[in-house]
Image 1 (cartoon, rainbow, N blue to C red):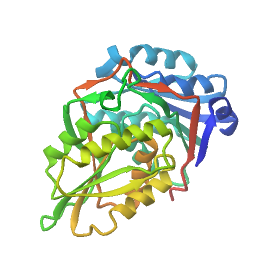
Image 2: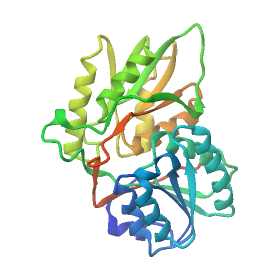
Image 3: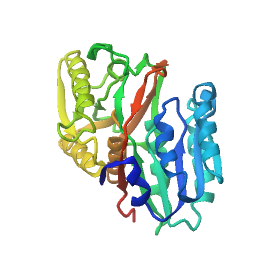
Length: 319
């Protein structure tokens, strides 16, 4: 894990030629920060992932991303149908990754679901495969018009939830059900998800002190976490890294190490680096089911402010 690095240093830390660059359009300005920094670099193929059901929301930045690179291909997703995410990624990654020595992914504004599906596809590809490099631009602030911690919000409501393709877990009728929530800013959506799933055991994970991308963001996360925790009678807790996927994987594993008598479901609701950590763990733990959820409303007008930093994560060998 490398970082945080200044945005201006990123191009120099990556291979001289990037064979495949994958990014995602969003209503967040953060979706264009790293692509802008790499626009003058030699890149053979660019895949711009975009939700066709949200074109009015993400269309402007999708066009900018498409125009920033000469050899770009738009990869259409439908956020309401995860099969389109898997099918589109399989189709385009197979072509783009043929003979590629490296694949660089800007994880910043992918949904947790799409990022995990893509990681599964890349990690299940035949070996030896290309080097996988994941980038992440952390926000310097979320819900930046809020005055108090209680006014901070990213989403409202819960539209639906579902298992993430490629992470079905294992279900034993004789075992009780444990839900693990990797808590972030979204207090309301987390609570609604817990109420719907009604687990026998609830485990809440929060970002470690000193292992978060920003002190102010960590403080708001901790505030949201405490609000969520007091809503439920019995809660087990653990901490995880928000800056290093390999550390995150180890932290999650330690947090659930004594839960052999439970069916385990994990909901990643923190940042993309910790979500990658969950993906890493699931390569070793096929018993873990992963779920994703969609909100009714997104705080698109002041969701986040991009920072001038980036984390670079080179995935270990996937043999």
